[in-house]
Length: 85
Image (cartoon, rainbow, N blue to C red; front, side, top):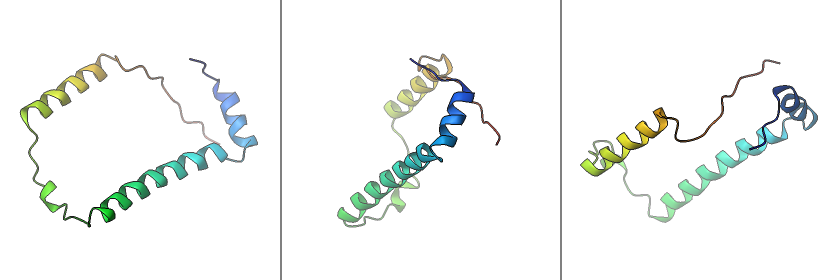
């Protein structure tokens, strides 16, 4: 995987006047819009019943496995540092 330096990424961000960040923000809003539309198209069902939802034993086991994989870093990620302007 190709990884650019922080300096390069910061200069790129400046040259594009924050376009990449705007695109990410637009993507987030678009996903929310899709979920909202799906809810409306489903007849706006009452979601209050989900407040007291109790996961099944299988769901709890799957969560434990996901957490264990994450702790063992089986999912490859890289650290990110925040650059102050």
